[in-house]
Structures are given as structure tokens and as C-alpha cells.
Amino acid sequence: MARKKEFDPEERMEKARDLFWQKGYNATSMEDLVQTMGLNRGSIYDTYGDKHSLYLQCLGNYAAEKLREHKEAALGTSPMEKVENMILSVVEATVNTGKCCMAVNSTFELATVDQSVHSIINNNWKDIVEFFEQLLTDAKEVGEISADKDPRLLAEFIAANFTGLWQTYILSKDKKQVEKLAQFLIDMIKN
Amino acid sequence: MARKKEFDPEERMEKARDLFWQKGYNATSMEDLVQTMGLNRGSIYDTYGDKHSLYLQCLGNYAAEKLREHKEAALGTSPMEKVENMILSVVEATVNTGKCCMAVNSTFELATVDQSVHSIINNNWKDIVEFFEQLLTDAKEVGEISADKDPRLLAEFIAANFTGLWQTYILSKDKKQVEKLAQFLIDMIKN
DNA sequence: AATATTTTGGAACAAATGTTCCGGATAGTA
DNA sequence: TACTATCCGGAACATTTGTTCCAAAATATT
Image (cartoon, protein in one colour):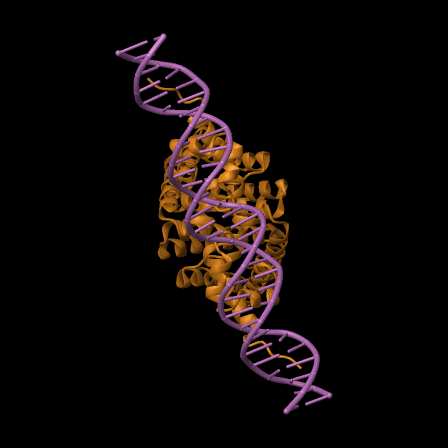
């Protein structure tokens, strides 16, 4: 009946995502995307819609994938150990890849003026905070953190600290320093 | 010998700065700047150079002013009280104006790809951390924080947390929540 | 093999972008 | 007053931008 797509839409979107991730939304041109995705302009518009729509899909894809990765990184025999490993895995991923969080980049570039972007990031943020909250609630029940702690507040605090770690990494480019800060955060939560 | 400038370069630069602050670098066009600054294109180029150069001047102006404001906000009879007031003043400024830190916006939009921007922000960051470090060193000597604490690390931790607070504010738009987080941070530092 | 539907490559477009340039206006100096 | 260095307004420029369109190619079904 008709031709098949000669490319994998998901795979090519990830190429676009990586470019947006690196350069930001406004600094990425359609020409950049054509080159990087290896697709024709028409194919991009047919498959993903316009630039903004493509970006939202990339951001959504990123958010979903990151949430999955975070949950996978929460390994351990106790709740607090899971929290700790999750934090450490974020730091490791950052210093290994040299890339920060696309959602955070997007927060500061677009979320204040773009409602759609705000919505995607906010939902992702909430998911992450809720996951932390659950772990910390568990930790509280097991007695790993003291009874007077508020799991919700603690979860928000940890999530907020990620952003601080990324900022620190961008400016210092110092793996050791970021690791020290992360360890300090973990110590603060524990007692 | 010649005409005088009919405008105050510093004052007009602040108009440009506020626009960059709000929209970011790439999303701000030269046309936007002409409108907002109320100047002719030629006058802008004559006075500040090109767009990028103007941006750097705005960012530098912002950084210097913020550092000054931070130091002014560090009021109190004891070192820790000064630290506390400084943190609270940042939160107040954020929720009152509805604007986050231009330098942080800039970090995530440009600092990874623009060396000049990176340099300005990094220096400003260092200045702020050093100021915190001094206060915390004082606090340690006075016995307001325990002897086993590392003022430098603590200072970096606080600075990093600002970024987290701003991110939280952008996403939640919730004044109360940001204030709660800030108070939580203060409590954590204190004990 | 013929058909129908979709993809592909690239030309084409209008609008927006950053930047330059020039004539006329202006005001301090000689 | 005349001069001249500088300013202002706005036209003009070449690129780059995001987007659309079309003819040719391709393939799954009939």
C-alpha cells in the first residue's frame, strides 16, 4: 500500500534529544536537527510536527527515561541505602557523561515562559520527589531516620539539591568536589 | 566639540539586563532590546558593542550588584545570624519579585558552551562562597557551629542550595514551600 | 504488474535575525 | 558664529530562521 519509514522514529528522536540537551532549545536550529538526525526536513515535520512539538517529545522521552533510571539505581537492602545509591548514581552519571539534567536546563531556559515545558518538568519532578518520599517513609518506619523527620520535606530537599549539584559541576567541572558535596548531603540526611 | 549622550548608559543597560534576565540570551532579539532600552540600534552598537558583548556587561553588572546586595543582607549580631538572614533575604527577594537568579539562568543556558559567560558566573559564585566561608569560619570560632564542621564545604553546600531553591520556586510557584525548604536548610546547617 | 499511498530530497518561501551604514541633527569648542 | 566631532533615526543588508511544498522514488497490497 505504501512505503515504510526508513528510520526508527524513537531512535532519531533520541538524537534530537541529545542535541537539545547539549545546546538548549533556542540555540538549536532546524538545520542542526536535520544534520544531527540525518533526516529530511519534511520527514521531521511529518513525523514529529514542528520544532516545539519535537522538543516537547524529546523532553517527555528524557523525563520518562530518567525516572526509570533513577528507580533502577535505587538498589540496596534498606531504604536509606536505596536513597544513598540513587544520589550517588546521579552524581556518577553526571561526572561520567559530563552532562547535567536536561530537565533542569530546560527549567531555567524555558519553564518560566513555556507552560507546556513547565508541565512536563513539574510532573517529572513530582514523580521523583514522590519516589524519594516513599523511600524515606520506609526508612522512617524501619528506624533509619529519626521519627521527627518529615519525609516529604526531606524528599523535596534532596531533589532540590540535585540541581545544586549540577550547577556546582557546571561551574567547577570538578568531579571530586561534586562527590564531596553529594556525600555531605547524604550525611546530613542520615543524622 | 561634540554632542553628549542623551541617555545614561548604565541605566539603559539595566533595562537590557532585566530583559535578558526574564527571557534569557537566545530568546531576546536585538529588536526586543531596541524597544526595551528605548535606544536606536546604532546607539546600542556604539555604546555596548554587539549583542553578546552587551549581554556580558549585563551579566557582570548583575553579578556585582547581587554580591553587594548579599553582603548588605548579611545583618545580625552573630555570624550565624548573618548567614541566616542572607539566606532568608534571597528567598524573600525571589518570592517578592518572582524572579530567580540571572546568573543561575545563565549557567544552565550558556555556561556550558560560552567560556566568557562561564568565567563571569564562576567568579561571582566563588565570591559568594568565600563570603559564606568567612562567616562560617567566624561562626565556628564563636562556637555557633561545631568544631568538626568544614566551613568551606558548608559554604559550597549553602550556595548550591540556592540553586535548588530557585528551581523549586520555578516549578512549584509556591512561596510557602520555598520558605519551608530554606528554613530546613538553615536548621540543617545549625546543628 | 498495476495501483495507491507514503516517504524522501531538496527547492522555495516569508519572516526574523544580528549588524552596518548614512544623512541629518545636535551641541561643545574655537 | 562657524566648525566639527558625535549622536540619533531609520533604512538597508546579508544570513539564518522555521516552515511549506512538490516531484520523484519506493513499496505493500490488489
